[in-house]
Image (cartoon, rainbow, N blue to C red; front, side):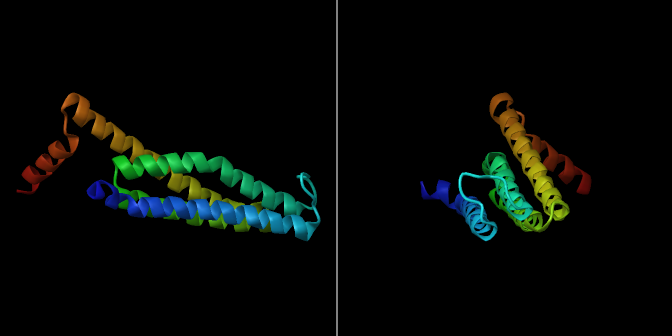
Length: 155
């Protein structure tokens, strides 16, 4: 059992870091409520509050997509590669949130970085699932064929 779980300690840590980030964003919305005097359950008010709230809501909207892609890429592609790309996603979300809290235009660099990382995770996941499915269900080991072809070429 330990051999099965240990390779996924890093991806699990990255997933927990993402959860911590979302909790931090929620706390920042609470602070913005206080700063801009917006009482719950109101969602309108000072543009600074509205931008902070939208940054948090957008991050929550992307969370299921990210966590699913991170998990599938970690399980079927490679746990370390998926974790590195996921850390880029988390950093992009940080830039997005902080930028959006300042101004709507400042959100774009972080948004682009995080969505590109998300695209990479999806490609990694699809690749891993496809290669695993071909090997398990059709007996076609694409990785072996590729390595054999490369070995013949370099010999």
